[in-house]
Image 1 (cartoon, rainbow, N blue to C red):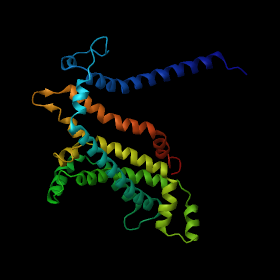
Image 2: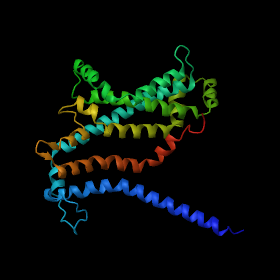
Image 3: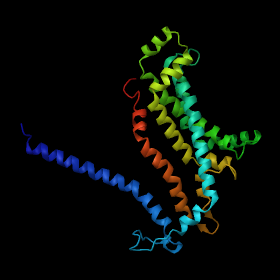
Image 4: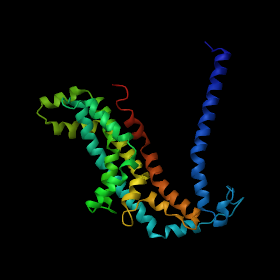
Length: 285
């Protein structure tokens, strides 16, 4: 039976509004990236103008890209960010999955599970600047300043609550009967955790790792406080374009594009794991 004209009209209006809103959000997301890119191919004089159409309003140049790609400091900062991001994400994912499994499968008596979860949430909402000076003093006393290890430990510690809470919900979505059958067959708790539970929540682990890596890649405060020359990350290196003579917009734009490209490519490759991983445990309470 054909639908009334009013129903079709309402659906059409709804679809048009939806696509218009999506187009607006897409433009808001893409335009800053586009503006950064075209600034990177402008000469210094054109960076202070509103020209945004290459070959029509200005002549593009690759001098900025060539100059930055020839600088070894760019690749050193990218390598430092990669090392710190991968290591801190792996550490947070491993420790967070262990804590999440314990909170999902065991009941603690002295300190209740809900209290532990509240403590993790409290760590997540704590302003990082409040701990910057104590952490600096701690790393100074341990002689770990300007090392990869200091930033890795701090990033893993600050992103650990997120890993714990997401993995806990993912473990709760697994039927406990699977683990009980493994216990009957003689498996230990560690065997169940590593051989059964972890493979079953692989999408959630992938989402935790990817998002934690992204958080570490973009983190500036602790990377700035704890590093100086050896372990400088890309966000800290990008901040170095602000000099006493002004902002070097061409160098800033090239460095920003170099920092944007790896996470964007990684996100596009594994976006389906992020969605499926974050939705694990969303239905079961």
